[in-house]
Length: 260
Ligand code: COA
Image (cartoon, rainbow, N blue to C red; front, side):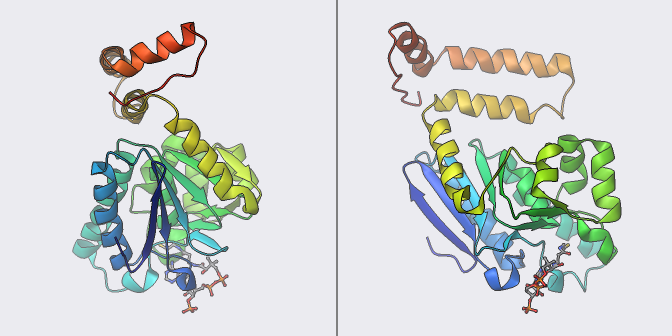
Protein backbone atom coordinates (compact mmCIF):
# COMPACT_ATOMS: atom_id res chain seq x y z
CA UNK A 1 0.00 0.00 0.00
CA UNK A 2 1.67 3.20 -1.09
CA UNK A 3 0.07 6.60 -1.08
CA UNK A 4 1.22 10.03 -2.11
CA UNK A 5 -0.13 11.82 0.96
CA UNK A 6 -0.36 9.10 3.62
CA UNK A 7 2.00 6.75 5.41
CA UNK A 8 0.60 3.49 6.73
CA UNK A 9 2.17 0.94 9.00
CA UNK A 10 0.27 -2.08 10.29
CA UNK A 11 1.81 -3.97 13.19
CA UNK A 12 0.43 -6.01 16.08
CA UNK A 13 -3.20 -5.20 15.13
CA UNK A 14 -2.54 -1.44 15.12
CA UNK A 15 -2.64 0.61 11.91
CA UNK A 16 -0.68 3.81 12.27
CA UNK A 17 -1.78 6.30 9.64
CA UNK A 18 0.21 9.51 9.13
CA UNK A 19 -1.05 12.36 7.00
CA UNK A 20 2.11 13.25 5.17
CA UNK A 21 2.22 16.76 3.71
CA UNK A 22 4.41 18.39 6.37
CA UNK A 23 5.47 21.28 4.12
CA UNK A 24 1.76 22.31 3.95
CA UNK A 25 1.14 21.48 7.62
CA UNK A 26 -0.70 18.34 6.43
CA UNK A 27 -3.55 20.38 4.92
CA UNK A 28 -6.09 18.05 3.34
CA UNK A 29 -6.10 18.43 -0.44
CA UNK A 30 -8.29 16.41 -2.81
CA UNK A 31 -5.63 13.72 -3.14
CA UNK A 32 -5.29 13.30 0.64
CA UNK A 33 -9.05 13.03 1.01
CA UNK A 34 -9.47 10.44 -1.73
CA UNK A 35 -6.54 8.43 -0.37
CA UNK A 36 -7.99 8.61 3.15
CA UNK A 37 -11.30 7.31 1.86
CA UNK A 38 -9.78 4.28 0.15
CA UNK A 39 -7.40 3.59 3.04
CA UNK A 40 -10.13 3.72 5.70
CA UNK A 41 -12.37 1.48 3.58
CA UNK A 42 -9.49 -0.99 3.49
CA UNK A 43 -8.86 -0.69 7.24
CA UNK A 44 -12.56 -1.20 7.97
CA UNK A 45 -12.56 -4.47 6.02
CA UNK A 46 -9.21 -5.71 7.38
CA UNK A 47 -9.92 -8.12 10.24
CA UNK A 48 -6.32 -8.02 11.40
CA UNK A 49 -6.59 -4.31 12.25
CA UNK A 50 -8.19 -3.77 15.66
CA UNK A 51 -7.25 -0.12 16.33
CA UNK A 52 -6.14 2.81 14.16
CA UNK A 53 -3.85 5.61 15.35
CA UNK A 54 -4.07 8.72 13.19
CA UNK A 55 -1.47 11.48 13.28
CA UNK A 56 0.24 14.16 11.21
CA UNK A 57 3.79 14.20 9.85
CA UNK A 58 6.34 16.56 11.37
CA UNK A 59 6.35 18.32 14.71
CA UNK A 60 4.17 21.28 13.89
CA UNK A 61 0.78 20.06 12.75
CA UNK A 62 -1.75 17.29 13.02
CA UNK A 63 -3.75 18.84 10.14
CA UNK A 64 -3.96 22.63 9.57
CA UNK A 65 -7.28 22.34 7.76
CA UNK A 66 -8.60 21.62 4.37
CA UNK A 67 -6.32 22.92 1.60
CA UNK A 68 -7.37 26.56 1.26
CA UNK A 69 -6.02 26.67 -2.32
CA UNK A 70 -8.79 24.27 -3.34
CA UNK A 71 -11.56 26.38 -1.80
CA UNK A 72 -11.26 29.52 -3.84
CA UNK A 73 -13.36 28.54 -6.86
CA UNK A 74 -16.24 26.93 -4.93
CA UNK A 75 -19.78 28.04 -5.73
CA UNK A 76 -23.02 27.46 -3.85
CA UNK A 77 -23.49 24.11 -5.60
CA UNK A 78 -19.93 22.86 -5.66
CA UNK A 79 -19.42 24.08 -2.07
CA UNK A 80 -22.27 21.91 -0.89
CA UNK A 81 -20.83 18.89 -2.73
CA UNK A 82 -17.37 19.67 -1.31
CA UNK A 83 -18.78 19.67 2.22
CA UNK A 84 -20.76 16.46 1.65
CA UNK A 85 -17.69 14.74 0.19
CA UNK A 86 -15.68 15.47 3.34
CA UNK A 87 -18.55 14.42 5.57
CA UNK A 88 -18.66 11.00 3.88
CA UNK A 89 -15.00 10.37 4.75
CA UNK A 90 -15.27 11.56 8.34
CA UNK A 91 -18.47 9.53 8.82
CA UNK A 92 -16.57 6.50 7.54
CA UNK A 93 -13.98 7.09 10.28
CA UNK A 94 -16.59 7.55 12.99
CA UNK A 95 -18.38 4.37 11.88
CA UNK A 96 -15.26 2.31 11.21
CA UNK A 97 -16.31 -0.37 13.69
CA UNK A 98 -12.90 -0.17 15.39
CA UNK A 99 -11.47 2.59 17.56
CA UNK A 100 -9.56 5.42 15.90
CA UNK A 101 -7.23 7.35 18.21
CA UNK A 102 -6.16 10.82 17.05
CA UNK A 103 -2.59 11.52 18.19
CA UNK A 104 -2.64 15.29 17.83
CA UNK A 105 0.91 16.50 17.44
CA UNK A 106 0.38 20.23 16.70
CA UNK A 107 -2.18 22.37 14.89
CA UNK A 108 -5.64 20.81 14.55
CA UNK A 109 -7.46 23.58 12.71
CA UNK A 110 -10.57 23.66 10.56
CA UNK A 111 -10.90 20.29 8.82
CA UNK A 112 -8.05 19.08 11.05
CA UNK A 113 -10.11 19.60 14.18
CA UNK A 114 -13.13 18.10 12.41
CA UNK A 115 -11.01 15.06 11.59
CA UNK A 116 -9.97 14.73 15.24
CA UNK A 117 -13.63 15.07 16.25
CA UNK A 118 -14.60 12.15 13.99
CA UNK A 119 -12.07 9.95 15.84
CA UNK A 120 -13.14 8.13 18.99
CA UNK A 121 -10.32 9.18 21.28
CA UNK A 122 -8.04 12.23 21.20
CA UNK A 123 -4.60 12.45 22.76
CA UNK A 124 -2.82 15.79 22.36
CA UNK A 125 0.77 16.86 22.73
CA UNK A 126 1.39 19.91 24.94
CA UNK A 127 2.08 22.06 21.87
CA UNK A 128 -1.22 21.22 20.12
CA UNK A 129 -3.59 24.01 19.15
CA UNK A 130 -7.25 23.60 18.27
CA UNK A 131 -9.52 25.89 16.33
CA UNK A 132 -12.31 26.32 13.80
CA UNK A 133 -11.03 29.40 11.96
CA UNK A 134 -13.35 29.05 8.95
CA UNK A 135 -15.15 32.34 9.65
CA UNK A 136 -11.86 34.09 8.89
CA UNK A 137 -12.37 32.83 5.32
CA UNK A 138 -16.06 33.66 5.20
CA UNK A 139 -17.22 30.04 5.56
CA UNK A 140 -18.28 27.67 8.33
CA UNK A 141 -16.93 24.22 9.26
CA UNK A 142 -18.24 21.83 6.61
CA UNK A 143 -16.94 18.39 7.54
CA UNK A 144 -19.30 17.83 10.47
CA UNK A 145 -17.65 20.34 12.82
CA UNK A 146 -20.74 22.39 13.65
CA UNK A 147 -22.42 19.19 14.79
CA UNK A 148 -19.64 17.16 16.40
CA UNK A 149 -17.94 20.03 18.25
CA UNK A 150 -21.20 21.12 19.89
CA UNK A 151 -22.01 17.54 20.83
CA UNK A 152 -18.59 17.00 22.40
CA UNK A 153 -17.95 20.24 24.29
CA UNK A 154 -21.44 21.80 24.47
CA UNK A 155 -23.23 24.35 22.37
CA UNK A 156 -21.88 27.41 24.19
CA UNK A 157 -18.22 26.47 23.82
CA UNK A 158 -18.71 25.39 20.21
CA UNK A 159 -20.39 28.74 19.53
CA UNK A 160 -17.40 30.61 20.94
CA UNK A 161 -14.82 28.61 18.99
CA UNK A 162 -16.71 28.75 15.70
CA UNK A 163 -17.98 32.35 15.93
CA UNK A 164 -14.65 33.88 17.02
CA UNK A 165 -12.38 31.53 15.08
CA UNK A 166 -9.92 31.84 17.99
CA UNK A 167 -7.73 28.79 18.68
CA UNK A 168 -7.34 27.23 22.12
CA UNK A 169 -4.31 25.46 23.57
CA UNK A 170 -4.02 21.87 24.72
CA UNK A 171 -4.72 22.55 28.41
CA UNK A 172 -7.90 24.45 27.55
CA UNK A 173 -8.90 21.61 25.18
CA UNK A 174 -8.45 19.18 28.07
CA UNK A 175 -10.42 21.40 30.44
CA UNK A 176 -13.44 21.55 28.13
CA UNK A 177 -13.34 17.85 27.26
CA UNK A 178 -12.21 18.30 23.68
CA UNK A 179 -9.31 15.88 24.25
CA UNK A 180 -8.94 12.87 26.52
CA UNK A 181 -5.31 13.49 27.52
CA UNK A 182 -2.46 15.95 27.12
CA UNK A 183 1.07 14.56 27.18
CA UNK A 184 4.59 15.87 26.47
CA UNK A 185 5.27 15.87 22.71
CA UNK A 186 7.97 13.22 23.06
CA UNK A 187 5.54 10.82 24.71
CA UNK A 188 2.60 11.24 22.33
CA UNK A 189 3.15 8.15 20.22
CA UNK A 190 4.05 5.92 23.16
CA UNK A 191 0.85 6.97 24.99
CA UNK A 192 -1.29 6.42 21.86
CA UNK A 193 0.31 3.01 21.37
CA UNK A 194 -0.25 2.04 25.01
CA UNK A 195 -3.90 3.06 24.74
CA UNK A 196 -4.24 1.03 21.52
CA UNK A 197 -2.64 -1.99 23.19
CA UNK A 198 -4.96 -1.73 26.17
CA UNK A 199 -7.98 -1.77 23.83
CA UNK A 200 -6.53 -4.66 21.83
CA UNK A 201 -6.25 -6.77 25.00
CA UNK A 202 -10.06 -6.66 25.43
CA UNK A 203 -12.81 -8.65 23.74
CA UNK A 204 -13.01 -7.11 20.28
CA UNK A 205 -16.69 -7.88 19.73
CA UNK A 206 -17.47 -6.00 22.94
CA UNK A 207 -15.32 -3.08 21.72
CA UNK A 208 -17.26 -2.99 18.45
CA UNK A 209 -20.63 -3.12 20.22
CA UNK A 210 -19.57 -0.35 22.63
CA UNK A 211 -18.56 1.91 19.71
CA UNK A 212 -21.85 1.25 18.01
CA UNK A 213 -23.92 1.98 21.12
CA UNK A 214 -22.00 5.14 22.10
CA UNK A 215 -22.05 6.44 18.51
CA UNK A 216 -25.85 6.39 18.71
CA UNK A 217 -25.92 8.72 21.74
CA UNK A 218 -26.77 11.78 19.73
CA UNK A 219 -28.90 10.07 17.12
CA UNK A 220 -31.57 8.64 19.33
CA UNK A 221 -33.63 9.22 22.47
CA UNK A 222 -32.86 7.52 25.78
CA UNK A 223 -35.50 4.82 25.36
CA UNK A 224 -34.40 3.76 21.87
CA UNK A 225 -30.72 4.11 22.84
CA UNK A 226 -31.23 1.74 25.75
CA UNK A 227 -33.13 -0.72 23.54
CA UNK A 228 -30.11 -0.74 21.21
CA UNK A 229 -27.77 -1.13 24.21
CA UNK A 230 -29.74 -4.15 25.45
CA UNK A 231 -29.68 -5.85 22.07
CA UNK A 232 -25.92 -5.23 21.64
CA UNK A 233 -25.36 -6.45 25.22
CA UNK A 234 -27.19 -9.61 24.20
CA UNK A 235 -24.95 -10.01 21.15
CA UNK A 236 -21.90 -9.83 23.44
CA UNK A 237 -23.38 -12.46 25.77
CA UNK A 238 -23.63 -14.90 22.84
CA UNK A 239 -19.88 -14.78 22.13
CA UNK A 240 -17.05 -17.11 23.13
CA UNK A 241 -15.15 -14.01 24.30
CA UNK A 242 -17.83 -13.37 26.90
CA UNK A 243 -17.59 -16.95 28.21
CA UNK A 244 -13.80 -16.66 28.29
CA UNK A 245 -13.79 -13.22 29.95
CA UNK A 246 -16.08 -14.21 32.80
CA UNK A 247 -14.42 -17.62 33.25
CA UNK A 248 -10.94 -16.06 33.35
CA UNK A 249 -12.07 -13.57 36.00
CA UNK A 250 -13.40 -16.33 38.22
CA UNK A 251 -10.26 -18.43 37.67
CA UNK A 252 -8.11 -15.37 38.48
CA UNK A 253 -6.23 -15.43 35.17
CA UNK A 254 -5.81 -13.19 32.13
CA UNK A 255 -8.44 -13.89 29.48
CA UNK A 256 -7.46 -15.02 26.00
CA UNK A 257 -9.90 -13.34 23.62
CA UNK A 258 -10.38 -14.76 20.13
CA UNK A 259 -12.75 -12.23 18.61
CA UNK A 260 -15.62 -14.68 18.29
N1 COA B 1 -4.29 25.12 3.31
C1 COA B 1 -3.28 25.25 2.44
N2 COA B 1 -2.01 25.51 2.82
C2 COA B 1 -1.78 25.63 4.13
C3 COA B 1 -2.78 25.50 5.10
C4 COA B 1 -4.09 25.23 4.64
N3 COA B 1 -5.11 25.06 5.48
N4 COA B 1 -2.22 25.69 6.30
C5 COA B 1 -0.92 25.91 6.12
N5 COA B 1 -0.64 25.88 4.80
C6 COA B 1 0.66 26.06 4.14
C7 COA B 1 1.06 27.52 4.09
O1 COA B 1 0.44 28.17 2.98
C8 COA B 1 2.55 27.40 3.92
O2 COA B 1 2.84 27.04 2.58
P1 COA B 1 4.05 27.76 1.79
O3 COA B 1 5.27 27.37 2.57
O4 COA B 1 3.98 27.16 0.43
O5 COA B 1 3.76 29.21 1.84
C9 COA B 1 2.88 26.18 4.79
O6 COA B 1 1.68 25.46 4.91
C10 COA B 1 3.37 26.53 6.18
O7 COA B 1 2.42 27.36 6.78
P2 COA B 1 2.72 28.82 7.39
O8 COA B 1 1.46 29.61 7.35
O9 COA B 1 3.93 29.40 6.73
O10 COA B 1 3.10 28.42 8.89
P3 COA B 1 2.98 29.34 10.18
O11 COA B 1 3.70 28.62 11.26
O12 COA B 1 3.39 30.73 9.88
O13 COA B 1 1.42 29.38 10.51
C11 COA B 1 -0.79 28.43 10.79
C12 COA B 1 0.74 28.20 10.88
C13 COA B 1 -1.44 27.08 11.05
C14 COA B 1 -1.21 29.42 11.86
C15 COA B 1 -1.15 28.97 9.39
O14 COA B 1 -0.55 28.13 8.42
C16 COA B 1 -2.65 28.99 9.12
O15 COA B 1 -3.34 29.86 9.62
N6 COA B 1 -3.13 28.05 8.30
C17 COA B 1 -4.52 28.01 7.87
C18 COA B 1 -5.39 27.48 8.98
C19 COA B 1 -6.85 27.50 8.53
O16 COA B 1 -7.45 28.54 8.32
N7 COA B 1 -7.43 26.30 8.43
C20 COA B 1 -8.81 26.16 8.10
C21 COA B 1 -9.00 26.05 6.64
S1 COA B 1 -10.71 25.85 6.24
